[in-house]
Image (cartoon, rainbow, N blue to C red; front, side, top):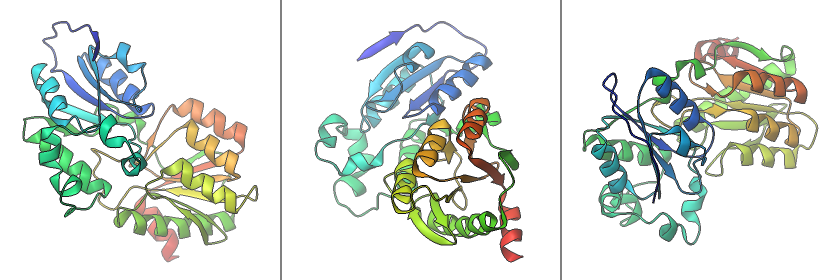
Length: 300
């Protein structure tokens, strides 16, 4: 159902297609693209995208996860040749009763994802699914770009983001967690791990970061632990880029964690000023480091 149409002529830049999931990242991308003077053709996934996007886009429609053919038709009708997918999709719902009806796949979706949906011959790992989606749109002349192509300022830089420098024990946990998270990311399992005293408390899988942190807290309540979130080896910046915001901090504080370690240049940090204020309020140290620095520390 179409909820908002305010399309106007714009000869400066081509329109941008925005495929929006959960969280604030889609709004940040929309803001950056609008500042460039682009029209935004938005498609919001049911039960995920923020309704505030309706007023931020020049054209907006709600779609199901399986509405691949419809999404392509909407983008092509408005002359979209560049698109961005931004925001989280709660993948756990694919294993719950009723998802097929709510997000029922159209014919284009069934054709593209027949290996996952019908025959079961292909896996449902994130990279497999998202690359299939990218290829389906590319076949229709629509190229997906990285969200940070339009908002590069969202990428976190190396250094101590907020808080005091990690203790020697925390550095050991950080380095241990980094190697573990990289290994899990390479298997396309998840990108976040929680550790304490070089013991693994929780590893992210299909449930997502917040639930991973909650599970660590259930096992290590209020005694302090480290959360490490990294990019996958060879991270495709067009999708599934690690992203943190104030919600991540709230989850860590509630679970009893006290250190968040991120990979610089490949992690998106939302609402940086608010993020830093909340980290200070919650007494959480946040540090970002690059791949080379992490390898050097581990080797040492």
